[in-house]
Length: 158
Image (cartoon, rainbow, N blue to C red; front, side, top):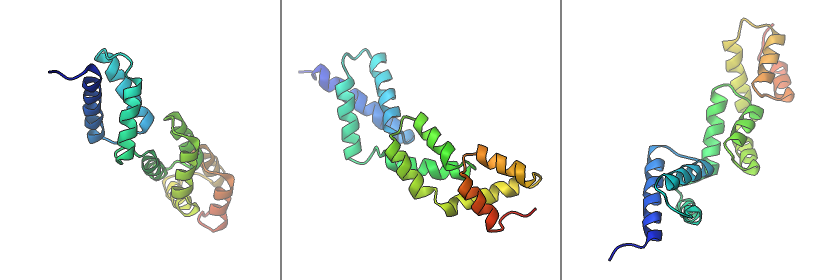
């Protein structure tokens, strides 16, 4: 006796989800989009409820955790020289919830981490004067308070 179409749909999509997650971590919404595309490709009808169940099960078992990914994303973007405002916008474009974004930025983009990133940018752009560097830092998403703090502690030399 064969499997029911619902079980076949679920097993196929679950297998695809695990293959995707084995390759790289995904945010919940991105994995949902991939599963929807896969369901359409395989001509599964009304797979949305099944996809939501799969995502719930993966979240419950710890394979899908948006907060951990958001924290890592913030650390990675800080190391690339971006400030909290730009990181916030980038995470919004990934359809992450605002409260998770705010929590990740609060936990990872501490003032000390931001000052360290600014000092690296200062070394990279040492040929710029103070005003051009300040404009560059604003463009990178740093707040005026952190930029002023970086200048006040003597981290920059004229």
